[in-house]
Amino acid sequence: MKILLIRHAESANNLQLGLPKEVYQSIRSPDPNITEKGRAQSEKLALHILKKKYNIKRFYCSAMKRSIETAMILKKILNINLEIKVSIHELGGMYQGSNIIKGKTRSQIKTKYPGIFIPPEVTEEGWCHRETKESRSEGLQRAKELVEEFQQWAMQSEGEDEWVALVTHGAFMDLLLAVLLDRKEDSKLKLVHANTGLSAFEFNKDGTNRMLFINSSDHLDDEFVPLPGEASKLENAVDYENDEELEKKILEHPHPLHRSMSAGYSLKKKAEKDRKKKKGHLLETCEEEDYPSPDLKESAETVEKIPAKAVAAYSLEF
Image (cartoon, rainbow, N blue to C red; front, side):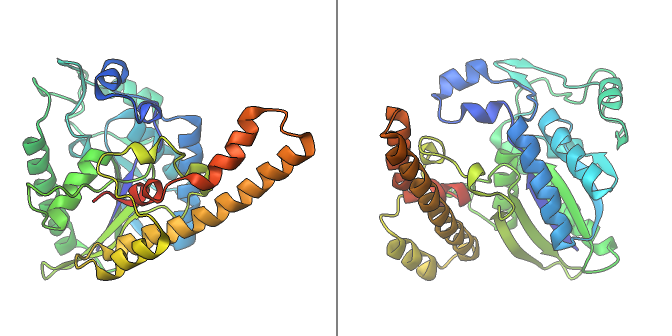
């Protein structure tokens, strides 16, 4: 059995990436909707899954709006059943400052998102029944319990080609991968997923499992690759000075994650090629109009200066 982990599409909160932590916490929504760009990302992802012919037998999302809205688009295009799984919510749960938010009620979800299966733990009071914000250690325990559940599913699966897909959240995905890759709790390694980024693992009946890929974003074109000031602001992003240095790191890295690094390297090369095309178009436009706008000239000159770390961080952080 194969597990397909999907990060939700771009949400309103994701637009605030790069703001100081204190500012972000003061303006973030505890339960944001996805953006227009997020809807486009979801559609691209659905077409990608159709192309790959993943045999999805079960499909889950969290009870958070950004997860449900991403999953509903996939449900419609892929024509598959969708079920809410409360335990795959984002790290921390539902909160605004020190206040705990209960989340959407059963009736609200049923009315706004028809056709979705709602489990009993989603009540008329909501689904987040905590009294305090979830700690990282609590989130890690939740991730461990979910991985154990994955193994139980594998024991009950009908065959190797059976897929279970889950639309979940960035910080919780990092904890899931920490468990799956046996990462030390004090490790500085942090795995970052793009919006609608995919990671997949194979679980076998004998208790073994295998990583298939991490943060695959082949379905996203350069329009969705972070611009300067976005991915480059991610903490701990590695700044590779040139392609040779990045390639050398990929080949020498002893950790199994070298496969995902290779994917990130391929993404970097593609993005670089696309940016050069975009740069040429911008410069041509500027030459024809004799730089009528300083912003246009600056854009043309900036497009090729996107640091390697921006694309590397888009794939994963070290």
